[in-house]
Image 1: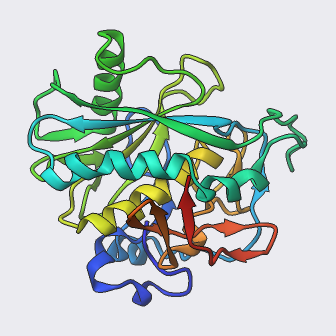
Image 2: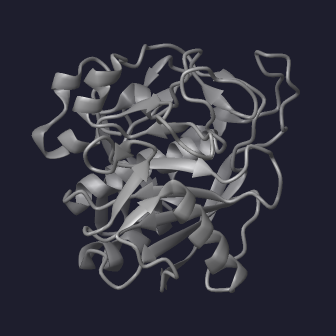
Image 3: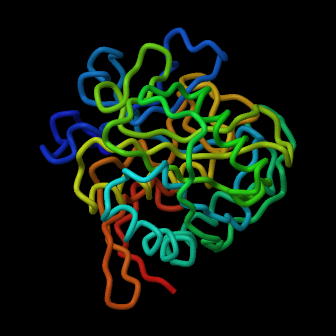
Length: 296
């Protein structure tokens, strides 16, 4: 989700494939709605541009202390992604990037009158990287197929068990196409995050989907930070343009904290390594952050 808040034209050429808007995916069989990391063409088709405004709370859950798992989808994922994404995720979960999200705690009543989940967002942990051997060997995957594969890999003990704080960040090889209804990865969207269930239950599975659209690694970390921040503050994102429980933090028209700041970037430094990350909208300053971050 890397579009400028102000105009689609502000997307850099390198990141043009990953400009975003939350959209109801057309003809999705399971009825889910997605905050898609949409391309400029998809944004133009939808006719929606993120409106600037504070995040509102709708009563849903956040991650108190997120536990991130990097899931490598088979043996053909980009070698730099395999080698370096774990280091990035290790850094971001234990960083000042997470500290800024504490303003989105949920010890309050939602704008819809819903009682909050009384959670405090704190730094989390990276619990490992797992290269799975997908049971589903298709090169064309639906979101439903990804959910089914995740559940299978968890049930077999290949992936760590799921709970209310576990986030599976999934990275795919370039030859796999992912569909959300009629929307196609790298044509209509560059990434998204979702939950298997619309209920706040320990059996839920939270995940981010990052297809390989040919982006450079620094672009992938920007995409990943966007999805990470939004999953942390709105881990059951449904529906896109009409926020309601069980959503957590959204604008009144359904945009998450990353959507309002696409194209605004900072850095995250961990030791001698510096990563690019996306800034997010912060209610306490009523604009996008401008910080550079560090870990630990």
